[in-house]
Length: 437
Image (cartoon, rainbow, N blue to C red; front, side):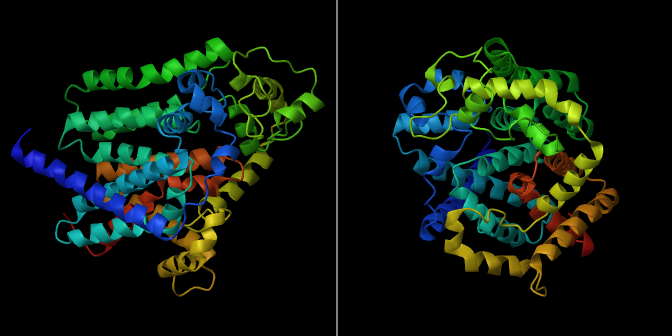
């Protein structure tokens, strides 16, 4: 490694550490670390006792969700038993990485005023949504880091093709094994975007093959495991229910029946695929329903075969319109988290900074985001910047996926890619004032 490259890498690492320090001080300084019990209540998390006692065995028998969330939780429990504390540290690091991504991309377009990139990156770190998600032991911060790595793969290709391909492959693996909303078909679309817009056409066949092999072997391994053991091809046995909910298709019982309810209302459902207590018992040892139970698996597969005869396009269209409104809702999003009360005044003030002239910030922030989304194509056409086009298409893919499929929870998942709004807003301002690189 040359001296200049070493200095550049060291600088990037130091910036990430700086952002990490800011975030973790803010989280603990504001006393947001009060959500430890949520790990027990998350239906996506397997039985905590099993994850702590037999982490490797438990990961094999998790089928309700892609395995990566339970891998992190199990690893934390196995190492020191402080899963929530470790989760906060991981979340803060992920948010620091997303903030670094904002800084890195904006500095590509703003050579003269580097401080703008730092200010925007820190604003993202200290946004209410980022602070709340840092203390939330769940998907958002992790997913945002995955999308950030994917975005960085577009913007590092001209400097280091190896680094770009590594970030591309690693982010595809990470997102697919973390979220069922990022299936392999989405990964293939992203690959198509990358090689159509970013790759320089030199050795593209070799690069494409390397990414395919590196990315899809571990992904295919999880899908194959679920097919051989649980008789479904996918990363989540819950997918049929989730899609039915998003499409507005009625299902038996409800969209989220507990295994106990399934046993009581559908006694004919039997466990055909179960191996260990982690996928057999209907109640976890902490008393919460076990949605990794084979009963829920059998119920979900039954709905996959029968529910779609009730699909109605008009009902689905009405839900899509409703989901879009939720997706473009207030930027702090997680109003139901109990720790939000500790920064209620700060969250309101932060939201007002964006729209100080309005008494109805909720509607205006939607209008602002819609204007950003609508005007981006024009600026991209003016500049013909393939990297930013790739990032914009990535955002559109995320928005369309969740608006179409995620029921009434679209507002919960927009944080995955909220860092893009900060990048797009500054990019539009730079074009407005003609600050070209």
